[in-house]
Length: 274
Image (cartoon, rainbow, N blue to C red):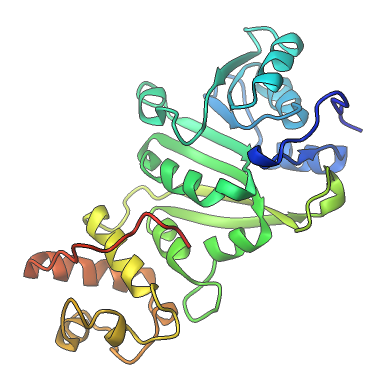
């Protein structure tokens, strides 16, 4: 079994659940397939179960860790030639500056309580990323890779599928962690698209947020305050459909049409993630 730091109690405010099962640790490391010379950064290394294998495979990685106790412990486990430790909140870290010189490979067991905000934060630097391998709550991964017309398809699906090709790799059972979470986890591979469909990302976020603001209502009703059904029809969207029935590409087309018509959808709160 992987090393468990018994003196460290998992902190709920950081969403800590530490992977300790060697089978699953090795399986994730194999999926990442780290190579020497790659610019790999791990989000939330925790008790270093995966960290050790990543260093084994590529020699050196960087990590972002917010827990001061774990930062101190990690510094006793690895040399600076093996691990560069960045003590900060992943949501506040300057990812753009870090990725400026060399593209990143991102890895992490993302805390369930902030998984969507981290994904949206990293989306801003998708053009500076080679790939991302994340373990998240199964429900979140299912939403990320969901197809139109399914209940899981939502705002997260649209916004991420605009930027990434995503593949759900496998599920990880609760007993692989300490403490065991109450949910199943899943590992997802995210590869940024070379040429995402062109769109004003800020307006796109507002359009998608409003479309899914009331999932049980039709798009006609969700957009009634901002424009009439002729705009939806012009974009090739049936006004009587609900948001989950519309593919990502049509939301891009609608956004570009709104921009050309000078319709901005001001006042929509797109910071609260589904």
